[in-house]
Amino acid sequence: MKRILIVEDDSIITDVYTQKLRAEGFDVDVAVDGRAALKIFHDRRVDLVLLDLLLPEVNGVELLQQIRSEFGPSELPVLVFTNAYLGGIVQQAWEAGANQVIPKAGIKCSLVVAMIKNALANPPPSAVPLARTATRMEFDPAVRKHLLESSSKTLAALWRPLKQLAKQGRRGDSRACFRELFRVVRPLTAKAAIAGLDRITQMSAALEALLKELCDKPERLSPSVLLTIAQAIDTLQLLFAYPCGVSACNSSVAQILVVDDDEFVRQAVSQALARVNLKAICADNPVNALKRRTGARFDLIILDIEMPDASGFDLCSRFRTMPACRDTPIIFLSVHKDHEFRTESVLRGGSDYVTKPFLYTELAAKALSFVISSPLKLVHTTGKSNGDDAESAFSRRELKVLKQAILASYDA
Image (cartoon, rainbow, N blue to C red; front, side, top):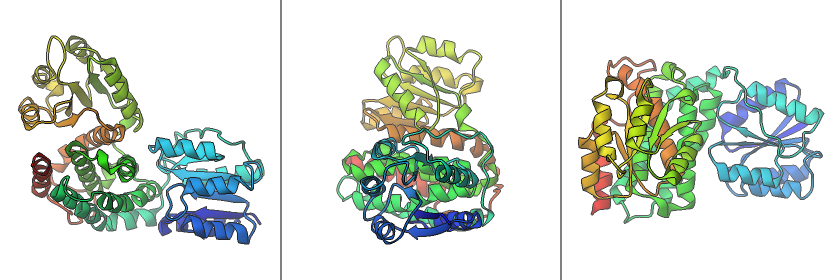
């Protein structure tokens, strides 16, 4: 009987895969961190490793490197689980000798089991890209029920460190807060995928990627980044309130207009959006942007402020006179960080403001948040939730006060 070693620190995820693999006739061992995995690996024969990359103690890449120092890809297949938005660590996994890198979001448990069977029957070579599946994602009803019933607790656990970050501004040590946020978000991504809540999975994965970057480099925190984290958490609360509407919006077909006269910035924005499977339609000046607008309806517009012929503020005002763009979210990009520009952006009809240089993970999370949440906000105004009427972790007023505190703490 073939033995599978699952290396994952979330008990719900390991329970789901353990049950499915044992039902298929496999022996299964579970390790919750890298050190425990190394002990099992050396104590008994293992035929395949299913490995999460972000682990306590010895991380997944280090563990993979140690495995490959003893066994090649054809001798011991290693299938890696990770957040597809964490581009750097995914590349490290390929370079360390992963047979397959499997995104936690949007992948069927049955497909993972099929990949395990295929790898054991005929181990594939290292670094073979995973083919995407277009089939509808199956879900585990028990995991979905648990995730939705515990959503208020999850959101409250995200709200606490966010409030602390808003309160302390630049004065405190932000690393502990980032780690606490990351500790909550990381398992949420995988659980939501197993539960079949694909929009929650997407939003959580984008937030996870942003938090991972901030855990590694906390000096990159800014008011813009912190506001993006707050928006992502707010979007998660909205999605938990309407789980039946989570699959109603398909972000992969969203139309996003990007207007900037700098080719480098247009490319950077396009690459950031591509991280969360969003496609940019670019224009290099306001005139071409208005031409792009003809006959098209956009789900999100991203505008540079300082451009020739007309400013981003003027273009935003023009868009707001068009019925099709009246409610379209508009994000301003600018090198200006002062309060006056933020105020003007609101007065001109802007929905949000991101300062340059921006983090790719920040812009990706913010854009995805708008694309996912906007179709649900109309439903939200009716007050008819599709969920279990769980108490909100925070109110709209509390969120508004928190955002004001973020800007005030950094202006001080």
